[in-house]
Image (tube, rainbow, N blue to C red; front, side, top):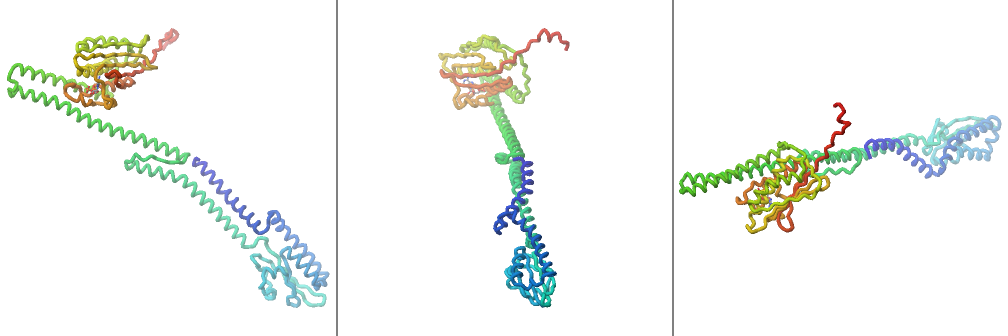
Length: 492
Ligand code: ADP
């Protein structure tokens, strides 16, 4: 529920809930007090005063015209009964001495000193929480004695204390309900905000691993979801920069190692020549050749490193052209065939599409990709015995809106545990981590960078019959729309 709706509902509840509670309370009180019908209560309240007035009228007449009746116990008893029904009664006195006290008053206040009350004759008196108004009337008995009446009538149907108590209860109920509602509503808002605050503090302290769990929906829930998304994003970017940092360190250590090894070798051979260890022309020639090869290796490594770092920093501009992959591969492999055959490698090419397979590619960079893969195949197949069948099969076909190129060799294949890492920079499977195979460990990393720069994907797998297979998946070029005759005439 949104905060706005929650607040609206709580305001409405603050107004209506106390009313409902008070009403229920009053109804309960009336019910408990024997007044089962509320209408009865109001009828009594309304009629009590009218009925009292009627009896007073009658009494006035009796006092003025028929005082005989006041000496008749039967009439007095009937009068007191009728008055009692209307919560009124008369204390009669003859010559200032009380002669009759209404029964219902005696019941209301059994220990009352009625004579004292009579002598005092106050304006009002309270019996059992009810307030009675007192009026004194004097008259003359027919026998000449002076008579006095104290007329007591209930002032208010509701006991006087009830009104302030009722108001107090009402205020308490209103206050309590608003207090409780405010507490629950604010708790439902502040709790998730508190959870967010805790999460924010954790993030401030660098702990990004704690998930922000806020169950509430509405605005705070949305805020928490945005916060959680931010935390994940932040964590990813921090993890990524840590990874970059780690990669950079590794790269530095690999570069220094890979440069140090040939340089130490070159130094050793040069010293050998200078110290006269290479004391024959043949030896000197061999030393010089080794120095040349080592320098060549270094040159190649530096070249690859340079290209790789430029690719890594996205500083290499791709010169995209729309090319037909089948034609391109045919042409490229024709050029490679001769060199490969010299090393005893048989190269074949097959296209499984009779349509031109158009892709947007930088032909030079793509050439670099293929060279690196073919060089690897040649390099790892050269480890096989001379009699072994050395083949490289290149095939191309259409796969949805992509073109798939597979380069398969009949070499030793790649160890299963190495497969996920061979495209990482400087990764070399253990068996090839020796100077014989050479290689910078950057060849496939460069392949990956270039293919991804083309919006494609590259992966390696092993061929069941033995050997490695490298797959390049490249997106097809979008069809170029030819300008229609109509458009040609539009003056741009
Ligand atoms: P390297 O310079 O060591 O060849 P690459 O990045 O070109 O580095 O290749 C990474 C690793 O992948 C190699 O060390 C090798 O273990 C494996 N690899 C690459 N191509 C082949 C292949 N055709 N056959 C077997 N293993 C290969």
